[in-house]
Picture 1 (cartoon, rainbow over the protein chains, first blue to last red):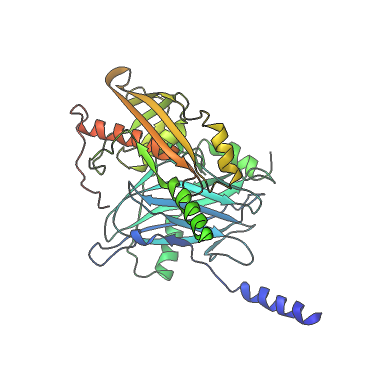
Picture 2: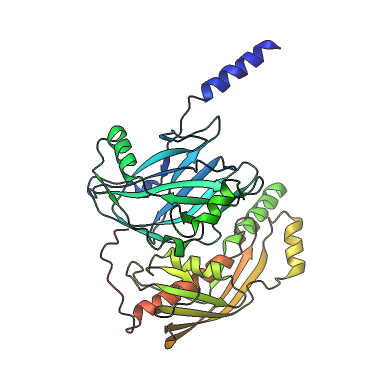
Length: 214
Length: 176
């Protein structure tokens, strides 16, 4: 009776050591020796004041007009999690992602939230364009998720810019990555209603709902 | 001997589901060229999100958005289609009874008009028709429904690329 329990406890304890990568990239998007490398850098995580959160949140990136896709993600389950490179007070955590890609034209085209009993994504794709040149590293920003209710999976990302903090993290963890340059995501809010600028004019209602004050 | 025959028959019926034929031939153009951003609204039974997603998939348009723009390019898609129409119900039921191993015939028929304008000024009009017949079963679950729409949107992109009014930009940065 006791032995299986001990075994299970040991397995559970060990599973906590298992850490997933914060990116998953299709083979066709991997750089080859002739192409050079371009990096897409950012953070995906959970908004510090969010009351309801998802277990998995991810951004999806694909080459324009091509096949395959890559994901930047934060997994937050006790048995499967990505590294927590950023941690604020409350349950604000974030995984830094550094994606080495073949240079070319890409787009952020969808997102995905999984809450265990419900998943959600954008029914219609969108296109936040990324033009990547070899030898450069592009900083897309900090994407923090929060969900609007206890059930269901209506979740959104709040976007903010923490270039200095994330550049320091990248220097420490990935010294081979060149210095980061910002990507202009100016039209982002017109393109998709699911990514809101944290400091923008649309954010106040979402912040009130996500933090449970409303 | 008899069981082999039955197995062969089941296999052939199953493979029959692979066959999908379109009346619209695939367009041969370089989709890596680029065209300006468009705003697309759809009238008719084909879902607007599906048409916009198919237009985005090729990456030819700089941006594909819903709705209407006052200065930019607008595309109004008027679809006459049996996209949500009934298929042959008795054969569909028969197919369901065999757990979709025996495929059922499915057809899709659409005439789609793409009105392209800049602001409110009309520029071009393309009429694209496609008739798809297919065998829907466990190897061909959508029965050619999505490829049917894909052919039409691909043909629209190809016609716009060939149209001298739009002067597509060559495939410069596109390395894919």
